[in-house]
Image (cartoon, rainbow, N blue to C red; front, side, top):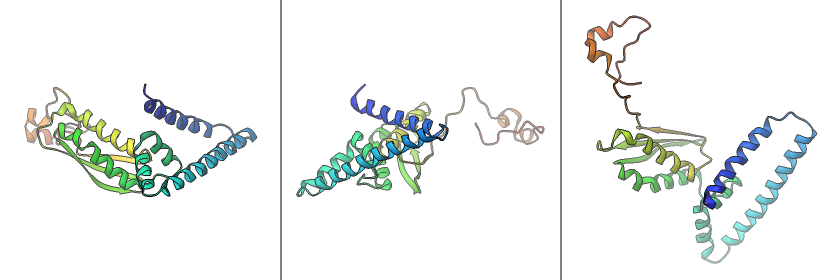
Amino acid sequence: MDNDGAFQNQIRQLGKLITQFDHFPDGPQKVACKELVQLLLDVHGAGLERVMEIVFECDRQGPVIIDKLAKDSMVSSLLLLYSLHPDDLETRIRKAVESMRPRLRKLSCSAEVISINDGAVQLRVTTTGHSCGSSTKDVRAIVEDGVYECAPDVVALEVIGIEEPAKAGFVALESLLGHGLAMAAPAGHPSHTGGAD
């Protein structure tokens, strides 16, 4: 596993440990541990913020270096953790959509931002009609991975326009019985008038 993958695994493990820690019973040890973790975060955050200030003040190259740091997945995660990332959520989401365009284009798809509201993101994926139904999972993976790589702080992600393919062998009830009979299906056995679930 490369360094970036190992780092991302460590970030995920850190999140799991913090979640587990929150479920520990209250007591002096828990309070002391919380204070220790908070102090470490405060010290590291202050130091990292000062590093960013010093880099930014370095002639004309400062902003360029900060932009490069923000594009590095490992450093970007740290900057997000300490609320020091130079790009806001909307900017990062739009960059994510832009970066996934070439891969989506190969699957005859495109993506656009519909809304970004309080950390909740809504994207629309459209196809040209030539994309294969079996690539639905691939398209979803590209979109979700692209968004969460650039914006792990997204609270909720909704992707509109990616429909799961119908299950093999499914035949709409109305095509077997005729439209009139399907509408008269007995109670407890609703007819499927919209296709697959």
